[in-house]
Image 1 (cartoon, each protein chain N blue to C red):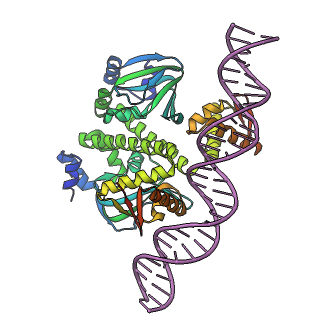
Image 2: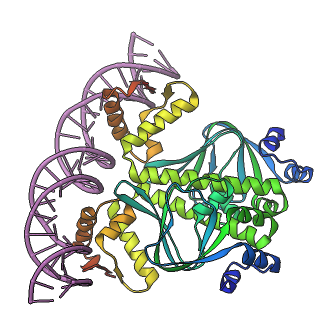
Image 3: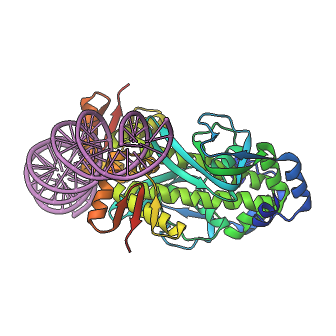
Length: 207
Length: 207
DNA sequence: TTTGTCTTGTATCTTTTGATACAGGATTAA
DNA sequence: TTAATCCTGTATCAAAAGATACAAGACAAA
């Protein structure tokens, strides 16, 4: 089970592999499960071994996406909490059947100075995540909603390797901190501009 | 010169102190100096020993603040670049006379697994900065400009410990990625709501 | 087939933010 | 003191985004 994880993260030290096996535990979650609540003390770092988790912020009836966690990805917000204990400011909900590796925070911290591979893993995660978040921040600051929605849809289509994405308008609204009506309106505009084609729970990118 | 820096960061290892003294260099900058350009390869980590530096993003004629660096603070974006080399996406400009400690990136990386104090310094910087940036992101996503401006002014007044801050409207606009006219209008509204009192290049918080 | 729920389209009105233009006060340097 | 520059107030118009309400199509379950 952990083999692919070790390989992906280049965890070669046998001692560390043993430590992980002894101190971490695996958990299984089904779609809709709440992985992280807001305002919750953080006791374990969660790494997605397999599956998909949505991490987002909520304010009243609005939501905004922070990031998705896919295979062998770590929630940087939890990693951050390992080094300065604090409460969670986000929610995380399972999208598809997901396998999680749970590592108690004190080990995450200890190992980062003890094992080179773990050190590199934490540093790289911080480094990459910081840059990703910075991009989101600038995009949010400088681009209009219409542009952001279009970029999102095109990137999503790209990742999934076909030009149609399946998603309701409400769901899209929840990625951008806005409401369904606004998204419907923008999508209609983009369709009139011949950039998209809309269907029931579907958006097709026109190239 | 480095004494306060070592103390603040709890750098007690004599060997590390020597390494820093041998490999890093100090530079002095006056107000207006450009410390980091956009799209520039990053060769050194810059730590503000004394002074004040403004780090921001630019897009056409708009600017948005990322953060200020004050005494003994590190530019996290540069730190991030030490672990995955990349170009700068921000600009940094000196606000007041500033003394900078410059450390070549390869040392920053090496030391983080060699010296405990340096390890802790980098990890804590990442951890704190990630949370700060996350807060900025959520605030930008959910709060209107008026609210953000008011929060900014009140926090600024708080930090400086008196209720009047000295800043032109243009300057404020550059913190929020908007234009001067918009800021003037919002400030006027806030004044009418009896939350602020405006003067020439001055904003007074009413408590 | 029918019923209820989910999803989408759209109209109307309001608020927020942006763009442009101009005038007058404040400040600074000559 | 004068001239130039910087800073602020404000008017007008446009665009973007939010709030609310309603209708109709699609879909799923009974």
